[in-house]
Image 1 (cartoon, rainbow, N blue to C red):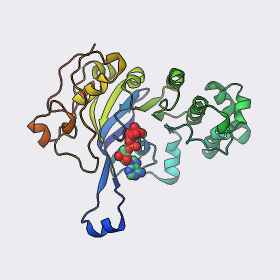
Image 2: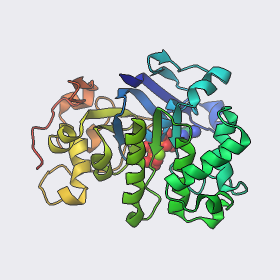
Image 3: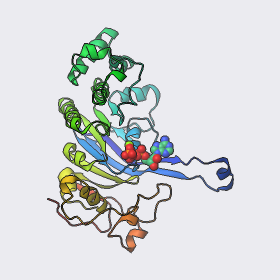
Image 4: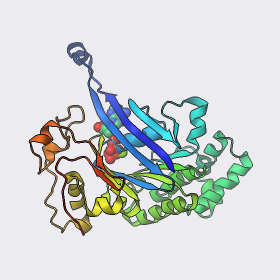
Length: 328
Ligand SMILES: Nc1ncnc2c1ncn2[C@@H]1O[C@H](COP(=O)(O)OP(=O)(O)OP(=O)(O)O)[C@@H](O)[C@H]1O
Ligand SMILES: [Mg+2]
C-alpha cells in the first residue's frame, strides 16, 4: 500500500528585493527550491532522498508534514489528498506524519523539561491524560536509550549531549506511533561515532511500527545503508530514482555517479565523472538539463531539452545519455 504519494510538487520562494529593485524590475523572481517532484513511499518502506546542499530536500520534507504550502502539485496520505488540509483536519492527519529535524539543538525548547517535549504531543492530540502521558514519556525515554527515564524526564535540554538530544527528538516523533516519518539529516549533526547507534535506533522503530520513512541525507553512503530505495535530487528535481542496489551499482545519471565517486568506499574506482564547477543558481536555471553546465558528457540536446524522469518502478532516471556502467 502507498502511504505517501507526491505528484508534481513545486515550491517557489519569491526573491527578497530592495525597494529600488522592486521599482525598476519588471517581474517577480522566484527561487525554484522544488520544481516538479513525484514519488511514492510504500508501507514499511524507507526512501532515501539525497543531493547536495540547497537542492530542495528539506523543502520537500516540510511540505510533506504541512510546514510549507506547495506552490503546485499534490500530496496524498493513504490515497487521501492532504495538500490543502488546514486546521482541525490537518491536525488529525498530523498525528500520523511526523518530522525529525536536522538540528537537535534548535528543535528543543531550552526552557522546557525534556519530558514535556514528549508529553506535549500526547496532550495536544488528546491521546493521554497528564498522568498517562508522563508514564508514556518515561517509557519512551528509556526506549530511546535515555535511562533512567525518570531522571532524563526532569532535565533541561542544555543538560544533554547532542546525541542525547537527537534521541529526545526521535522519542517525541515516535511517541505518537506515526505511520510516516520524515527524518531530515537526523544523524548529520552528531558525532560520527554515535551515528550508527542513532541509525540503529531509527531502524528499530521502523521494524517495530512497520513505519514508512523519507530519510533525507546529503551522504550517499548513509542513504545506501538505510534505504530500500534512493531518490537523487539536483536543483529541485529528482534526477534518478530506484532500488538501492540499482542506483548504487548501476547509476544512470552522471550526477549520481559523481556523488558516488565522492563516497570513500567507491572513490578508488575510476568513475571518471567528477563534478565540475558550482551548482547553478536556482533562480536562473540553465536551459535544457539543469545539470548540463557541470556534466562531462553534455551534448547539444542536453542544452536544449529538459529530460523527463523515465524508466521502471525499479529504476528511473532523467538523462538524455544515461551511463552504462557497473560499480562493484
Ligand atoms: N523560506 C525560504 N525562503 C526563501 N528561500 C528558501 C526558503 N527555504 C529554502 N529556501 C531556498 O530553497 C533552496 C532549497 O533549500 P532546502 O533547505 O530545501 O535545501 P536542502 O537540500 O535541504 O539543503 P541542505 O542540505 O543544506 O539542508 C535553497 O536555495 C534555499 O536557499
Ligand atoms: Mg536541508
